[in-house]
Length: 605
Ligand code: ADP
Ligand code: MG
Image (cartoon, rainbow, N blue to C red):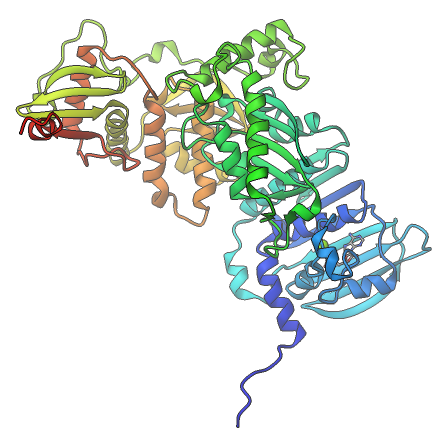
């Protein structure tokens, strides 16, 4: 009988484990910082070269390791953090699997130097592809220095998946930022090719958030503080003004560990129902503390997912905590009604803008974060205006008509409809023989704008509009990386973006079709989209999505009263559009109700 089954050699099992834990330089750094935090470090420095592809070095001033422990730490399932079965039910450290160091060491050229404070000398261990090559004494400050060179040099399949140095740098800096938010009491430093990316002194959460999110963003954060049974929730949440097009600015931590969890995210979004548009996400830094036995972190090797013992209790506690903060927020405060009666036609973003402006001049004690007044900010931050002489702005598709103009005649279907009027300032009602045609004015305008943008692209480029006062926007590191990488392509679709130091970029031009809209919001969304699509995709592959994003920004959201002339113009433009009867997001634009259907409803048949 043949023997088919082998027990795999440890070098191979380590590589398999690495496949789960080590995806890219940023994941190595996450594991190493977790170890430094678990070792009680108060100062953590991350230095990378070529986005971490060439070299990663993490230095801490934690309790270090003895020579014996240092050698043991490289063995699979070797950990100082748990010892017996029951420990798994009450994990208080970030690590516990004893997998990170051997996994990383198996797929790189690795060295570990460490010294306990009481020891006269340190130990340095050099490992190559999982094999220990050298162990020697070394002089060093107490703490631990881990150096990872040529990550995946012996795993060509993984090597291929690594992105450009710029992209990887973005991920690394975002990872360090996320962890830095979880521990404002720890100093963090991060550099790439000797260029400083982050230098964060020990401080409190407010200041740390301002350093990581940018001063301007942190002005729109409101404190959360709540206790429901054994669930304690603290942190900050944003108003609608900061809403983003993806979830990347939702930072949630369970017992100090950064996690991405559907239940947690759902509870937050429930609290924001009616406050921000669907498909948009707030900026949130929320710390959920609960007894360790109430949460299982042993779900996935990366420990990004958790399971709650009492899921609905946690869900409701988070929702309640966020709702309480939003209820007190300045843009909802003059609407004393309960949150679930929020009026979807109210533009909370503009209310927040007004509230922020009012607060800036009043210096209310309840102001979120200790920030400088608007006056001080506006000195640093150029405001946005549109060049007056360039006022040949493409007319708003939803308000397309200028005074004194008469609608042109066109022979198409939509122009031939006889207009009944508008319903709920959102829908246009028309008649066509025995049919009632209902048009979603927002979806239709978006479709028209999208078509115009596509046409301009085919004709050589999207018309762009220079801003009289260029605006600056603070971004995440990944967003800056895509802005630089695609700057030429972005200029082809109307965006001129220039580096403005650190993670700030300056917007000098935007597509003309959105000239009167908020350039900060649009640029942020476009870059978020690019980060989401991944930089491996060719720009042309994501072009359509970007055009629909611009189209979406070009139209007025929600309720908007149109006069007859504006309705006629929209119908006319719909006829000029290569109409797929759906908006760029695939939502239907028009719907026909036949006379027969109505008669059936009224039991006339
Ligand atoms: P885990 O963190 O799950 O225990 P790791 O493989 O990440 O597993 O680390 C193995 C062990 O090495 C840890 O349990 C810890 O005792 C030790 N260790 C790792 N990094 C450090 C560090 N920076 N300082 C002190 N000890 C460390
Ligand atoms: Mg660890």
